[in-house]
Image (cartoon, rainbow, N blue to C red; front, side):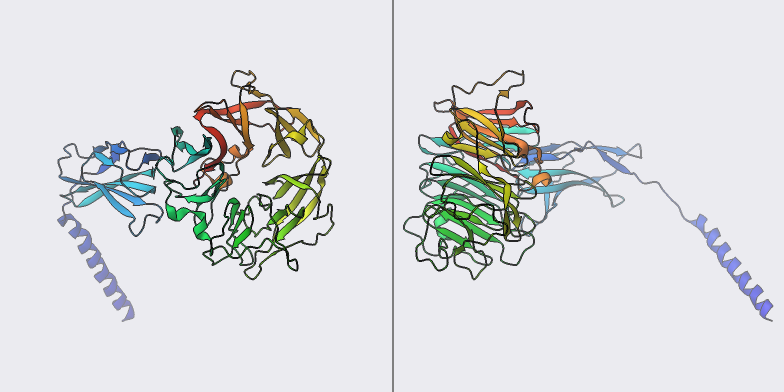
Length: 519
């Protein structure tokens, strides 16, 4: 009986399968027109907002010879990062050929062409990448002195091209235009800051347009505006890991030290005092800290130089601290109370993080003081980098720079640049060769600054890390637009050739330079 039932089931399944198979022939299949889209850009397209018109002429290829369907075309720009507000998708065209005047928020986009076959209701899609920038999105910001007042120029960079922009602040009535001193860029998780400092004050610039308005004056960041308020140095610390006291901003003025700790919107009471001491003190216009402390992993210390008492002090950064201290140093190499005059300081990436300070003793000789292991809110003194510097005429030098990666100190005397190896204590004159191998003559120019630009995005930035190895020289030939910027390749070997990388002209007297970075 069981076997009979099995046979019955097998028979029923055979009938069902046969019926299905036999039914296939009752359907009619027709080929549809398949579309492929060619002629789209195959590399990143960079366009200027409110300046460029994006034109794309796609080529549609059909599998059916006729290709006679009715089609609907839609061009859509989709933001890759949701930094453009609530919207992230923008319709920019309804014709087959795109002709769109760029009016999108700044940022990166995927631009799609959607082709709808109205007969089959099938949509075919292809895309390319685009970035919307403004002329001031990225490039070298060159701070100049034009007849004693601020002039800001820019070597704007977009893709492989460069554009010279003059007098960016010409339309703004900055109240503190006299005596330009420096321009600072801080990239932090809480927002990019561009700070302009002069002999009479300081202000922010809009990080995108570089525009200025009254509310950008740095004095409005103070709880109570001091009678004398001339900022000299500023840094925003925003490490990825730490004790919870960060992010933190440190601001130095000609008279005070201010700190804005995590969660505060204004700078708190001055901290230029040591606990237990009645008198306050003035500090040198430099913040000694980790080079990557701005955008690094661990909270760095902040060391200042008390110019009144000629000593190093450490700034307390915790929310409940209100002063500086003279920290105890394990394995002391030099006293924190030095008795010397401040000359120059530089933060570098040597061995993770190292800083170098040059001080002048009572006989006029210059001394090197090295700090290392600048993280976890602590530091050490470097025994190999504490000595009197013996180099030609260095006591007369007023311009200095320290290489970000090599232990090279550069200084200027009588318009001649010298290189000093801090590890081996050797020196040489810096002869710069042009593209033809000829020595560049700087005798008719005044060297106004030398520096290395630290790139906060490092190798992850769009410019790459190579530029950190290059020395930047500002000089002035005189006249209205006699300013020069030269970027120079520095070899790893002490006796290697020093060659010109790029040269720019047409500035007023250059005072400082910083690269406006982008990720």
